Image (cartoon, rainbow, N blue to C red):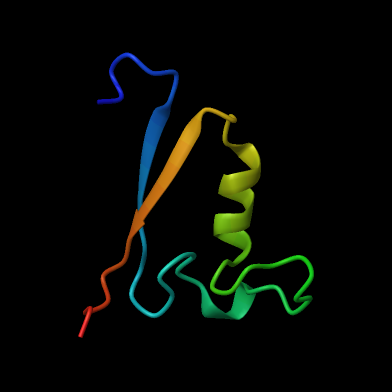
Length: 64
């Protein structure tokens, strides 16, 4: 599906306890600068990705 498109794909696996960044204590306290659940690790990855990247994420948490 992505073979002929200009999109590259990155898969990021989260860590238990924080589905996006793995470090609970680094989440932004300024609500204007953050989205729910995004910490410093995820924030820096998103800022370094090229525009043609699609970021997919899976966490280790149980869906139940």
